[in-house]
Length: 556
Image (tube, rainbow, N blue to C red; front, side, top):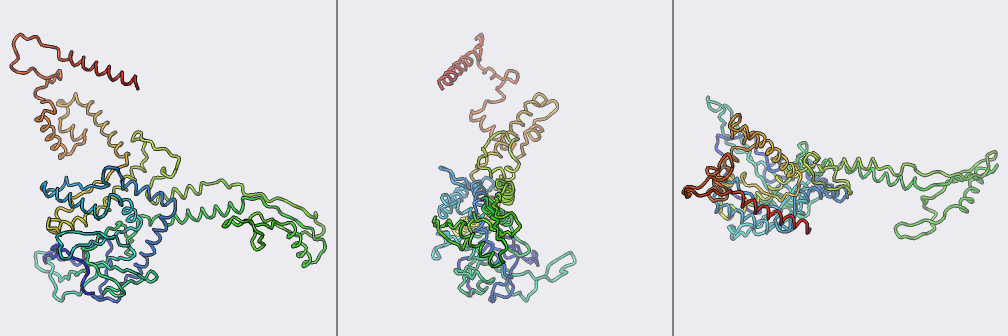
């Protein structure tokens, strides 16, 4: 197993001696634990972290089955992945990429091919939900070994419980490299760690032990090259244990508390709901043994003998179990008030649900979902942005961060596809990868309402300050301070206005009278021509249009 399965892309990571660092580069998920026992280690010794990851993933999946947690997860997934009848959930955005139109067209086509291989348009909800719950996502890139330039042929999902990302330190080079720390020359001898990164795939991992297959690939494991696997993590890391966490992790305690309080409420209501009777049986001066025997005879004579079986729906006689309507039988000695029957009332506060509602809100807060979404009878109001809860805006930003993190999966796939097809080189991708963005369909109208109201307020301020432009304020000041336009937006808008004037879409400002706002008379007009009122004909057209509009309203 000295040879890795899969393929590797040479991206020219060999550094010059002038940039040597004793600290290795952090890996993809932010976890910096690696083994240094050589290439053939006995096992992956990370102090049971892998077992803990198994337990965590299994717990996350169990949490997703709880109705309240599932509702919150669905709110997050539905907000992040918007399924539309005609549009794709995500499209690539290349406006910030400094490249030619031909290259951009090729990149768009390759991204479309990747989505088709993933079947992302149909399975987007399931893919994002699995990533959100597990906290990590693995896909194996399958290529044609005989024809790598054909690109990715298939993307196969891998269960996170069967995969582990490993960073292993190779044997140190006996030759030391010098690090220049100042003008006096080399001051210190520093070795840069040589780190090997790969994935370990175990078809049948041992979930009960804290060890998986060895670093050398024993126990049925396969070492897979880093470039052959798509790896996307949540970005949340437990620094103490070096474990990647899910976004559900902080809700574990809240969900357990909600489950416990619900179970205790059910038990309390079942036990205190019915009214019970207390029988005080007069046993006179009978000895203790005979008194107990007499009490049992009376109980067997008058007690409720029938028991309802909830599993089968049958009513049967079973003396082994105590029914919920079981009465209490107590002996009373001579000198008492004789045989007496009293009633034990049921619980009085059986309708209290404030504690349940509190823990439900706590669960939603832990998952980052607004509390207002718990109420099933709550209406959806699209009013003014001032009426929108701050929690909804926070939730919209949270979903945006999730989308940004999830987009790393597309970036990895697109990088491999473009390099394999010789469209770009690894060096070119390093420069252009960070400028490629992904545009998700947006379904949260709250931020849009906020922007609309802000624009309306700015335009109102512009109308107020317009008489003072050129007197106390400059045009540039108004555009930057009132309209909040950036330098880039100003250049783009000016260019667009100029293009629309040349195309005749907008009138030329030089041909407009600044006082009346009407077009200036054209040169070459005949002398003595009676000027016509330009507004008469327009007023007639407006009147006719208004009359037609009023007629349509009356019909409706």
